[in-house]
Length: 478
Image (tube, rainbow, N blue to C red):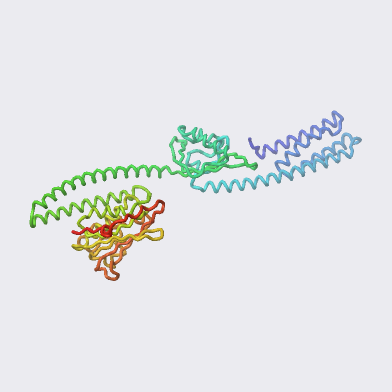
């Protein structure tokens, strides 16, 4: 609707007043009638009241005076009390309409003030806000939304949201979801990733949330939605994922080929150890140790990759089976373990914990090192200890021993990854790990690596098998 300017309003009122004067002259002088024509006077009075409120009283006084004066000049004999009442009625009507108009405009100003305030709140938001009515029409959009979509506000208001903004490939599905939300008076919960099309034809990905708007009667009238542009983040994640997959491919190829080469070299080294003697045999033994370290490094890298490649998903694991399997890998070591069936919450990588701890005790212990594995059931947890009679761990090293790339003090210390992996795995399962002296305050008497694991009570523990006392102690010695 076109809004009239101030000059146009003045011109209309002046024209109506001129017509009123002419009608007065025509009815009194030409037709010799009374004041029937005065009903026309309400038009300029009401219009003036709507446009300028109390100024309409002046117009009412002027027209009321016109009625009385014209009767006195042209037909004084027909001037009655009704003419004075009619003039007074003009003033009353002008006052009432002016008061109502003033109240209406005050409310409009308050509504506009609140609307402008809300619009400013929306405009400062760094996300798109849009109001879409039940007929899919855009009713409001904030400044950032206009900038994001590449439109001016007036170009979006009144247009169909789905036909203008939503990509054609998903338009019908999104429209059906919208209509379903209106029908049940509830938007879909949570945040969704929805594509939109800008004016230039570019497609953006928005993290979208919305809620249904209701009228005074509680019936849904539309939806207000907000969308944050996550296009760059999505593209960066895709690029990172592609780079990660490519790096993993290279690592897989390298690990496979290096392991194959190591396996062949290790086989020949074993043959040479049996064939040679003296210094030559010792040199081959050192060569074999280097190959074993290479295999260990590749295994550690593979384990770290598995740790960071997926979320933690624990399950009940038979701890006794894991320990026995690892002990079986060291048939020449002196390892004591009293079987104790118990299930813990872990995953398939739990084997790495015992591989690192038992392997370290064997690697860094003196010849003939004794290793003892203990398992103790607690309230909700299981305590595990791997104790050895090796050189022990100095007090200065204990606090940082499980940190990445921190090595022990032995000349045979590794690359510092094994214990870091151990700590990462145990914390991933919800436990903790630490190191103590096997004999309190005597680090030279060996180390005791202790850790806890959450106990699994979801399934029944397997029954303890009745075995001879001699069979319950697993002992392997060189």
